[in-house]
Amino acid sequence: MSGTTSIEKLWDQLDPKTQEWLRANPGSVVLPRNVTAVIRKAMGDPDSLDGTDRNEQLSLSPEDLAFITAMANSAPVGHPVSMNRPTA
Image 1 (tube, rainbow, N blue to C red):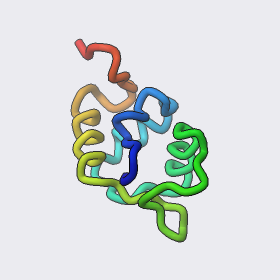
Image 2: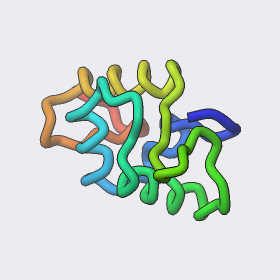
Image 3: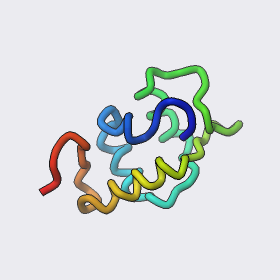
Image 4: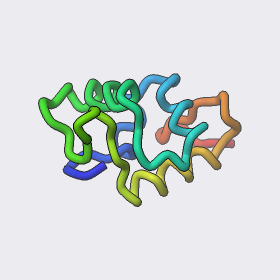
């Protein structure tokens, strides 16, 4: 995701279902509309979101992909992980 906001900065604002989807699909370079809509909501529903295409799908930056992959590897899928809580 380009612009001033990243998935990492928004992570704790995303609902557990969306976090789980991202963690279960770490190789997705383009997010579907429904996931993009959740990200828009977490950002305060901006009129435009850098990286969206005409179908309202969001292309992720290499940094976002690396973050999502790290989160996917941090705990078993099915257990949402907050960045503020240690994973022990």
